Image (cartoon, rainbow, N blue to C red; front, side):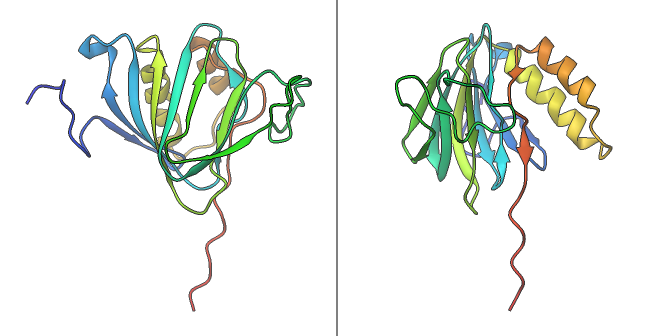
Length: 178
């Protein structure tokens, strides 16, 4: 079968403790848009960020995420969850079937505040920028060593990721067995 038809569970998969990303359409296939299926674990927060050139589209297939895509009246430094736009937009809790389009220069973020993984379809234009970003971030996390913040910041610069608030991964505490 050609790589233009990708069945459930198929596609190149990158798995880290903070995300599982399956490549569904890539620049190598001739696509101008990178398309991924992403599993977001409980406790993962992208942190607010924006892109100068890229545009993104997120579609929730299963589960629920907190979503934000607007310019806040004030970019507070450490946390985006309380942000509000001049028009009164706030962070929303969005479930299955919800979508978020993010044009260039638009601050945005998502967080899984639930105890269940969330599955979403993620598209990014232009290809292959996010493909390379996911590959490099997976390589960094897979070493098992402490992450060098300066190296991560340099990687973000190369891939048009302008971080505003920190990325976090704080899985919920395991419940004791009864």
